[in-house]
Image: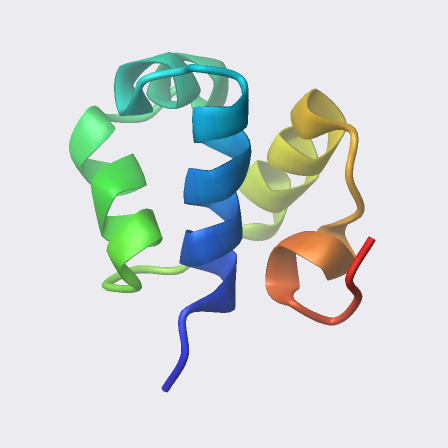
Length: 69
């Protein structure tokens, strides 16, 4: 199964030249959790999705692969 969320999170993070630790601080979690999200091992909870969408200025649908913008 394709990990669209993880790919998009990684892409957005790299565009802003951020480390996984930076995203972990924003979400209040560990760097390992961000790594697992990017790899598709775990999925984000609703609150994390909303925080990430707000931070990156994208929609939750974009993060989940439901839209391309």
